[in-house]
Image (cartoon, rainbow, N blue to C red):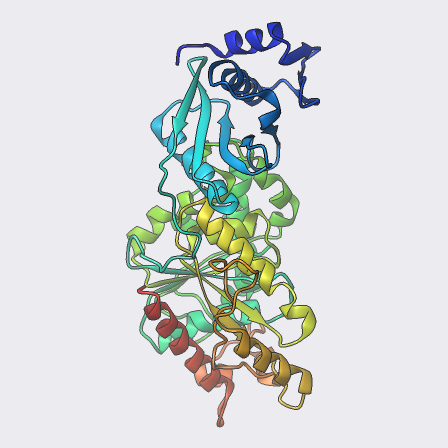
Length: 450
């Protein structure tokens, strides 16, 4: 293909397919107008090329701005093929990233013909993506290296997410003899304060701008992140047990995330090696993970499906959903599972739900008991009517009960000597519950081939 972008757009104007006036481009037959950005010029050039060179009638081309840029539809309105348009793909890596995005959209729409159009030295290029895109079923995890990476997610706060994340980290390290890294992505910074104490966090990390939030801020400001030293930001051998647990490390968070989290989606493509804003965390921390050879990474995500959580999901092979067994806390489970399912397919990355962990369980509550039983009965059943769509995950056998010890265990700056001192004695104790949960989680990962 030899046409330049300008030649295609000019041809479209001459043939009455397009109207260009005061920086606004109008698709005449579709009666849709958009600001003439670089990406819009590529889309307009592709539209003209399809109509004039491929004998596609204008009314069969659906022009959209949500996920798919152009759709070719048949007489019955069914989608035959889709096109993803990019302003510039200067190298093969950029092209492949765009193809992966188009492949994900094709999977959700059920079409097999999908393409990527882009500008390369001002010439319109069209790349046909592979016709063999991944099955929409979430695939077993095949880690690229031995580290198992798990995000903890719920759309509602106050469900025990941080308590479970920190307890799992301590039990995996002490009882299972594993090396563990906790990554705190939550603007509330609770996991950070629980594991390292508020004063130490403030004096050694927050005031020195050595937190994940400060790294993201540097990326947003387009400053080179190279002066940001993750080796210095890393809190080694943390926890309030015995003055610190050897092999349990932390990447701390900051409330600064509250100020910048809504701006993260505008991080430009390829900034510091990240192909999209959801890959910033992964690109920043992969070298650190390989160097330190952790067995497990636990990512404490904020109570949303926003940009920070998507950064955690992109980096993860697995995720846990902690919940209180009531209507409000479980309401978002289907949304989480559907989003993870789509996200996995769009990025062609395995992402599996290990299960739902019920916490703050009250045995005397009939609602709690019936909720747990209902979700156990839903295990393996489809969330939507699609036969190969996401399904409800298992419910962990271990239930974290609502006790005073559960509350005191996450109080910061309360030094203890052992796990049993922190989580309590008795049968069954909170210690037994978290000990069993850590074992169950490891077994769940093994079941996925991890």
